[in-house]
Image (tube, rainbow, N blue to C red; front, side):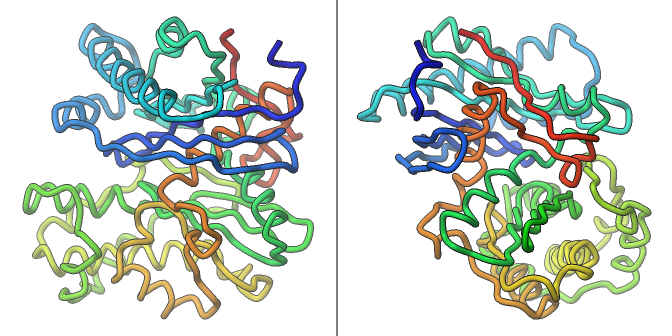
Length: 358
């Protein structure tokens, strides 16, 4: 019986708000203090699937088109799961399946991650935890971020004192761990913003290494206008949907100037979020795809005057960090342990979450 053992080999699957691919990571953990990374990989979605997923962003209800796209996405997930399971030497005890977020509206009590967990379970016959966010939202939380308890484990594992984990994904979110405090929130739009801009300008997926942004000049007027959004003055905990911030005016800029402006915008939203905590931190650890954007990282280091490293300095692949977290969260969910907290999602008490298929 899966519940009878202390440690579990758990496979976490994450596809973020950038809708660019899957991250799969295997961890061995007790869902508490023990954690061992067993490997993983990232894989891009086929172009047809990327287009399909982007076409249903913001959806609020099912229809025949969405059902077809969900099946296409789920079948892709199953195919990649079978590959990593075959390559792994240890038997997989549990799968932590996040799904693909298409709409996140916590203020309206709604967050939707597509992906047919029942279909995955029927194909693989491995217990699966899914729907991680609903219990938090129905209890008054934002449904995000959910990874802070994983960050806290990493802090302990590597004997760090006052540290923040900054995820530069489709949306940037941060976990601040100072003393015994654990505070987390979404800072603002991140890679999803710049990727949309690049796709519309030159039909590429992203600005590789931030090389175009490095050659641009930031439009200060547009930057100031973007920063007036009331979200950035809102007190945490708080969570953001990718559609909450309107940035139509930036498309009037050139490719290079637009990307420079976007990176300054991302930097400022992060700074506005953490400025009151900076004096309590020794370092920031970067994870997520944005850590590879040289221009963005240079701007962050210039604006935030504390030590900034990537998770690779801890020998942890920053592309697999969130997938590893959901492998860990799956075990916590299985054991009915908390995955969301008052100062991370806004719930009034620590709560478990996720649903089990077995």
